[in-house]
Image 1 (cartoon, helix red, strand yellow):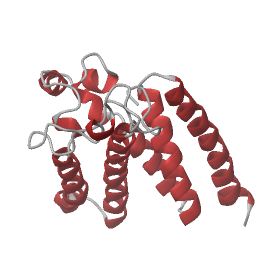
Image 2: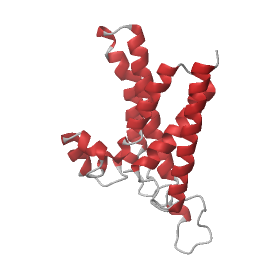
Image 3: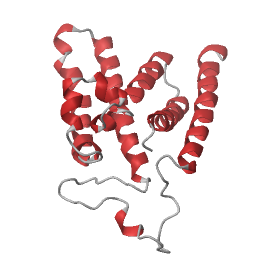
Image 4: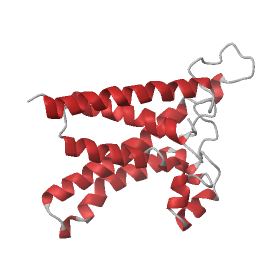
Length: 190
């Protein structure tokens, strides 16, 4: 799902579903939606002229020197993001109150969730993800993808193809439905 909007929509739909069923306060839901929106775009920082690449300026330029779906689409980046989500709020504890730290922690974990969901979504694309890059050059996709092979799996989609557009449509409908349900449960039912 190389299209930015598809990554954002699918990730947001999954997280909104989780937030709805766990009945979180509206403030947590808003922070989570923002964090997932940022995190779902971050793995594509290695693509020139993407919004996230331009936003990070010099750092984006450095990432763009790498091939796409290498370091930023590996387990090492996921572990780094998880470590940052866990320890960044702790480093900021000196000058903040407890409530602010909890919101920061939610925000960082939401960025991590968006990042991880982006990679999981890409794992089902025909291009796949090389989770153990640079240790392994094979991705999640190489086993089943020989041209004309009967073993080619139906659940791998083509980036930018009709299946991706369908994912985007269903995710958008899910976001609309879940947003209405969250609003209804937070403001109209008491």
